[in-house]
Length: 140
Length: 193
Image 1 (cartoon, chains in turn green, cyan):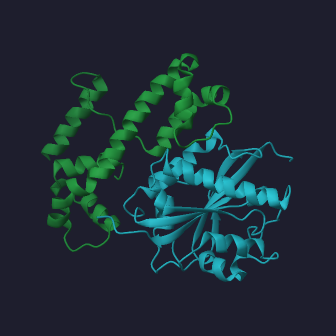
Image 2 (tube, chains in turn red, brown):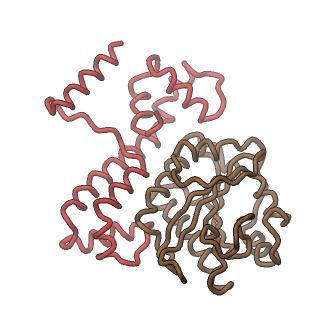
Image 3 (tube, chains in turn yellow, red):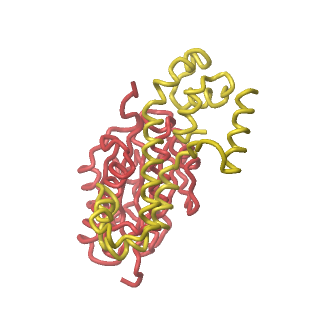
């Protein structure tokens, strides 16, 4: 109950733009590349024509041609990279952060997918750090 | 070529009891996870070189009539399209989202223990040999994007091109939806520690 109250307070702060900035929800890869395709699609087509996604080629090209890249693309790229890094970190640290909760609240359940489903269901009994990892990992 | 943009589709395969092929344009991460997460029996050992040879020598037989492909053809499947620039391995930016969705699904705990085979196809437009090469390069391009930009462990991904040799059953060989890539669940890679 307390957690819900905190969340509502945080949401209120966010909506009014007051208080310390609360980290926004991390982006999925799908949303991240969609934002990039929208914000940088034109730059990619003109400045990086023929380059394929993968191995940092497009990112490298946008860096190399930085002077010609639109401001919108630069802003979007920085935000997207930060969000993706946060999500990847959450996914990588999930097992460790949720280990105790998995044993305590979901003991005996086999399979990573089922354990996650159990932890997500028992959100109120699960530790703050585990809940945060699941949220940041994009698994809610 | 008559079309300016080549399309490929990813065929996603998971369990072993259904063999229906569903085309899904508006695919979601959840659907991919559900479609791929039903592998209940051990998947067959595969060798991409053997699979490619079998496809090249198939003599027009469908996938389900070839000994090695047959094991894979039984898996439940889901098709999504990936658009490429014409006669190129460059993925169109408008298809980035689809790849991102697949990556999100492969990073989910329901699927993160599994290996996947990316199978590139081509329509019968253009030369056979060229189509075989292009489909292989496109499958490789998808594997590369998934394993670098989208941080999927490359050891979980295999890629093979079969050109126009294994057209989708019930679809004309020159139909554009034969330009597709299949993604097939090959079973457990290793237990995450």
